[in-house]
Image 1 (cartoon, rainbow, N blue to C red):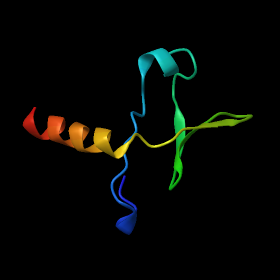
Image 2: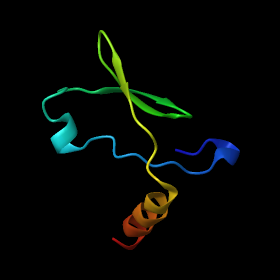
Image 3: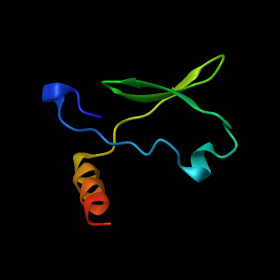
Image 4: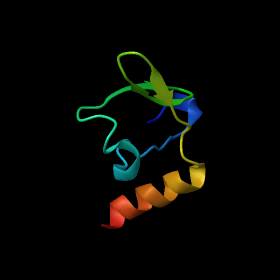
Length: 64
């Protein structure tokens, strides 16, 4: 996600060990501070991955 001058941000939206039993159809709210998994009665918010992972992830996708 690119927030203009805020730079590129990275987050794995689905991680099996984290999300497998939490939701079948997951709803996310994406904010500058990070992504939030939205449930009926609460939200679980996360931090963006460190910038190092952004560069590595983009590079991997380009060469694969």
